[in-house]
Length: 277
Image (cartoon, rainbow, N blue to C red; front, side, top):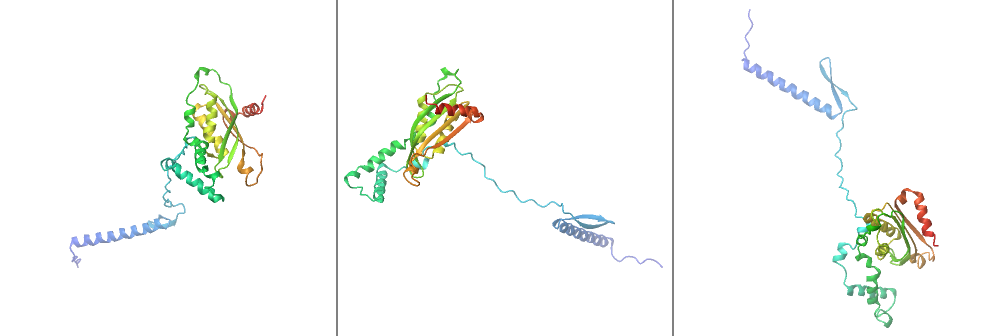
């Protein structure tokens, strides 16, 4: 007896073996893919692959949301007439026509003798009352007197009168501003501080914003060791309308540098402001 020779050539047997190996690899790849997607971890037991639950399997992270770059806003002291207003500002004639419309809305006749020239007078008055929009507060403080550079104690200008308008009702509020600072490289003319107050007061304002703007521009230009600003005012929008309480005083303050860090400096400032003798 002898072995019957294989009727298939050697090349055919090799091709079949390769096909079987390809099928096995594809099956193994499919099982591993299913394992990864289900959070299972492949292990080998007795030489065979099995799967085990892996609660610590890495979960694909969701893409982080895009965050727009943060742009620092301009300081309040740098905001003057917006470009859109400066380039599209109404004419004098349009302003006077608007006043005539308001007069009619109030219930009067803009053509009667007493009101005939009122629109022109109002437009002219607004040019002065709100002249602060065209003034540069920074430029007022650029000239520093350095010949008194050796002086480093407090400089206080108090009882600076001002008149402004509430931006909510366009009704006046008025009062006094007090400014103190500790110079570092010289001092500015005392009248310049009063002009800074006028620059910001002659705009539509809130008292809180105006107080901060005065402190901002002095701090940014003079770089003093400390600055204190106090504004006290009566608001006619509270006296003439609304609750109609006349004589009510509103006080706002800003303390920077040495005045903010040392309570004794705040006491000194308040004492000097209140001591009228």
